[in-house]
Length: 332
Image 1 (cartoon, rainbow, N blue to C red):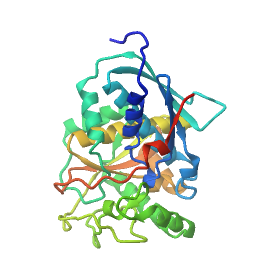
Image 2 (cartoon, rainbow, N blue to C red):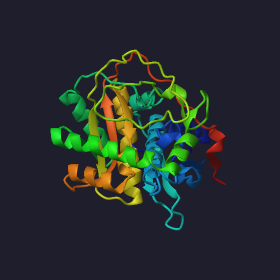
Image 3 (spheres, rainbow, N blue to C red):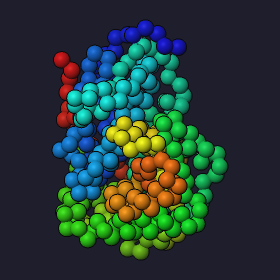
Image 4 (cartoon, rainbow, N blue to C red):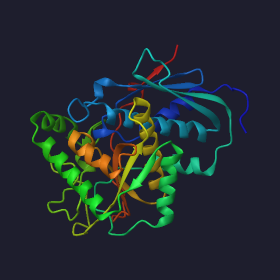
């Protein structure tokens, strides 16, 4: 039960931000900044880290920041506090995306604790998955995670719709890789050495010359081959594909999509699943329309997800994050 407003030590808020920065972001760009103090955490978009070619609309930046927002909220709740979320709190500053405000004490529930624990071990997994379907109970739990954050998670099960997804991913990939500016941008953010504080390191990318899957993955090996070990190189996979969508496509919708993405990925991790997001077909207008058609023109697709049972027994290594002091400013 919520009590009256209480004093919150800034270390609680700082710890929440430390978990928030573990959220996934497009190409591990980490396009966020935080201000904290007086019982609140303010989240800002860092436009200097927006991808001007792959994410010229800013969709992926907002979704990435939304994932960080839900990670921070869960951390504060798990520390024993009630928290409210105010999105787009400052109409004069569009980069101020949300504010988390502590409103009192509360008893953390086991589900929140499980998701916070999952945040420490969650990884984007680009390796092949087992050719094993997700059961109805698992699908229901994943769906509930998205609904909890105001989004919908639609699995692409129809044969022809799955072909549309495959076509959308392939076409978007072809359009982007033919663009020299896109290639330059990819080279800037991929092929990083182990221990890099941002970008996609070679240790997070598997090198599979002949991948046996019906859905292509983005090529992160433009500058250097991946070094992530893969034992099941001959594994044939047909991963479950999901569209995560919102009712609208305003900045707050994209932010909510990121919150839903974060909760879905943490839920998948807690369930022992592996996952990797796709943004390519949402970066090209024509392929975006293909995704719209799959949704039946109901809702706005925000991200495509590949989820399945991992074929490997070990998780990919954690990708780097910038020092916490590089993304935090104290409220005065």
